[in-house]
Length: 226
Image (cartoon, rainbow, N blue to C red; front, side, top):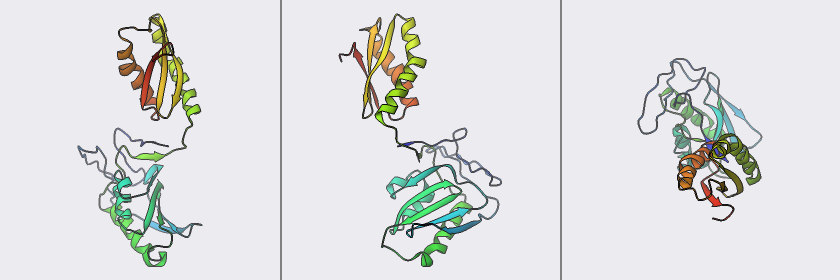
């Protein structure tokens, strides 16, 4: 499961690198990272013979891990997209101060032939005032089971939703969750209330979807009957 990338005041920035200048782009609202000195990188081998790690010694690329598995998948990372233009590249992982490049098994030239060229591509990208990630890129996270999400839903209901419903003489309870669809039941004064659907869409659904990105739809049931 992937969730939305973090940002500071709506912008990405790499800490520790000196003198970063924000450049605003209306379409993506991103910060381009500008370096006032050379990006220092070194190459590290890893146990996987199809992978190589390119480590930035004087900065941070991303605070969370981001993986891109195709050119189309890398729309939110100009750096990853540039590397994935090479047909023999299988995937890119950005994490902290490293870019891990994975080749397609049995394809393309050897690392001995391309490692320095790839290092230069990453270095030139960083030094050319080019963005690494756009706000909205999805980071790697542990997937959450439906049971885990259901448990979180009940906590959100108890803390943020039910007190207001109970104050108005009603209640909203958890019924079920599966494949992104959350079913809630309406009770007391909430049962067939003329404002129930408005409350559900403008209030409950927005809260749930903002706190649980796995939730794609919230359905209101009347005492367990839709």
